[in-house]
Image 1 (cartoon, rainbow, N blue to C red):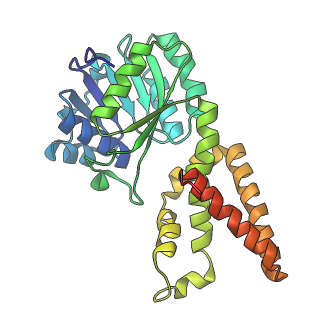
Image 2 (image 1 turned 60 degrees about the vertical axis):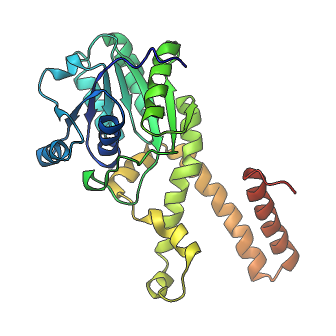
Image 3 (image 1 turned 180 degrees about the vertical axis):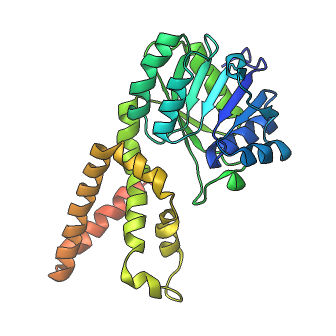
Length: 288
């Protein structure tokens, strides 16, 4: 990749929560681009300005001057914002979302972009915390994280390279290019299922008495139960087929473990545990 994409850009970040705020901070501090910020809460915008996360608030009419617009909103809100402002984007500008589902967003916004002369690209930064909001945003949130990019068919390679370079400049070390369908299939397993399991696990009546009896495994399994239920409800339902399939498959495996334990089936239980251990080692690249 060449350095020809390092020209200074005007970048607008729409939504200054954990992801949008971290995007703004990283872009402001690690690149030479000019950063505008926008949020439904004006106090958040003022805080972003005072903490040097943005150069200035996004004013009415400024979208037409932006080379890149990063939409860090919930999926439906992202679709609504881009659709409502479709005629305002600069011709040839890139609009990138950060939503955790891609089929729902991309299927609606790819045609909107084509009709209005801008480029829409799906994006999903694989980074986060159990807390939300600008107050928890971090300049280094994306360091060594993965970024998933979902360009429309026919997107110029130079456009994809421009976003890839920008991602690397703000800390991402791994960039995946995929389709909306493949993204949602994988994310149902790697992210959404983990949140469902954590939420269900912590609701055991036994959890109230865990103090003094828990260590790393408990903390690891319960961390993401501290989720934003509004956002995750939307994400789960917008990827319901893939996620439900993963939940059903897990439930079948758990039932098999339960059966072996209830029946004191030592050999079956040992074999299932062995398979799990080997599968983890293979995935981690360990050599036997």
